[in-house]
Image (cartoon, rainbow, N blue to C red; front, side, top):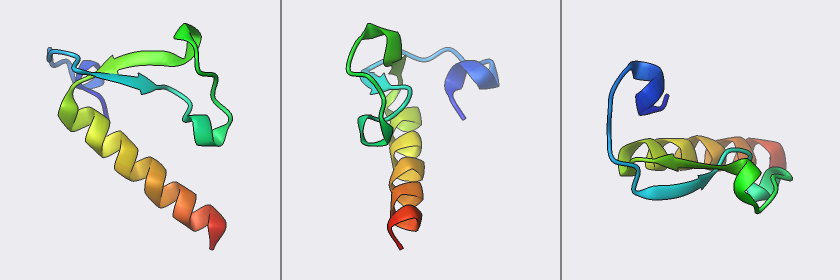
Amino acid sequence: MHCDALGLVALATQRDHVIPLAEGGRDDETNEQGLCDACHEAKSLAEAIRGRRRSA
């Protein structure tokens, strides 16, 4: 879950792809969002787990 969804305000320090490039997301501004370090780390971990499940 991201800060804004929780009603929190945090400095966006990471440029994140909403739809990961590995899952067909575009590498342009229409697929970008700013996330804080903690939210970016959590989202990246969830994406990695999802990717491992797909390849198993």
